Length: 178
Ligand SMILES: [Zn+2]
Ligand SMILES: [Zn+2]
Image 1 (cartoon, rainbow, N blue to C red):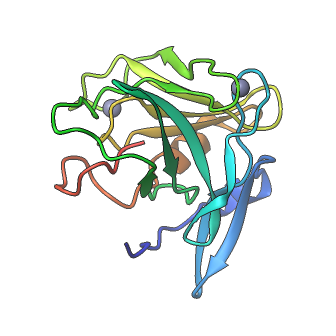
Image 2 (image 1 turned 90 degrees about the horizontal axis):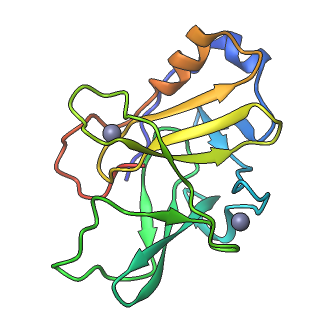
C-alpha cells in the first residue's frame, strides 16, 4: 500500500503530545504513533512487527478458537493491518472485541462512532502518555473513524488531526478500519 501525503497542521506540531512523532519519509510528512498503552499501562507497541518500517500497534481479538492478534499501522490515518490468523469465512470480523495482549483488559468503551454512515456504538480507547491524552478508533472494522484527544490542545486542532485519513469510508479494500 502506498501512503498518501496529507498536510499536518503546523499549529499541532508545536503541541505534539508525547507518544506521537512527526517524520519525513520520501520528502513527505506524517504523524506516527510511537507509544500507546492499555488502561493498565502495558505498551501496545509491537517492536518486532513493523509496518512501513515502524513498530505496529498490537491488539488481541477473541476468536472462536482462541485469541488472535491484529497489528495496526502506526502511521496516523493509514489503517493498514497484519493478522496472525486467517479468519474463517463464517467469522464476524467486522465487530471485534479488542483486548490488551498482555493483561487481557478490554479496550472497548461505549462511545458512538462520529460518522453518520456508521452505526457503531463502540470505540477502542488507547492511552497516549500523559493523563489526558487518548486515541479513539471506531470498533467496527472497515470504518476509518479515529480521533485524537490531547489535553490542552484546542478542540479544532484535535479535530483537524482526526480528519487525516488516507482512505474514505466504504472503499472495497477489506479490513482497513481502525
Ligand atoms: Zn494491559
Ligand atoms: Zn465507525
